[in-house]
Structures are given as structure tokens and as C-alpha cells.
Figure 1 (tube, rainbow, N blue to C red):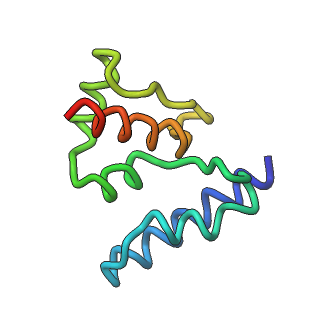
Figure 2: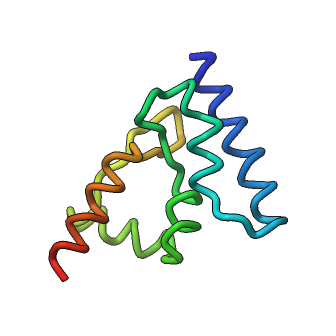
Length: 96
């Protein structure tokens, strides 16, 4: 459980720094959290929306229709495996 708390605090700190500098978010999050999660890190909705440019409302609509992976619930937080998110992106790209 300690690794998860460390991961969430690093993600929060990293998100705060990236909002100020405008750098891409996911590579920094991945680099800082790989030690805690292995190759499959967890992404927050803010991470996903920052990467895609789409709103959280859009994603929650897709979830309710079964078109986007359901989140893992950690307490009251929702997180997605990076591998699930990337698989969903690849499916969308293949369907174009």
C-alpha cells in the first residue's frame, strides 16, 4: 500500500509541475512511477484527459456505454491501467 501512496503523490506532484511548464505529462509520470507499478502504471482521469485533449465527461459517457475500459477503484479514486488505455487507443486507430 505504501508504494501506491508514493505513486499517487508523485503523480500529483508531477501533474502540478507539468501544468506550469506545459511539458507532456505521461512520459514523466511513467518514468517516476515505473518503480512502484512495474511496466503497467496507473493513470488518473486527469492524466488521460491531458494526453488526449478530450473531456472527462466524454470518457465517462463512453464507460457507461461500455466503449471505454472500466476503472480500477482504489478507495474513492478511479485509475486505469496504462496498458488498457493504450489498447483502447490502438483499437480506435485500427477502426479508422
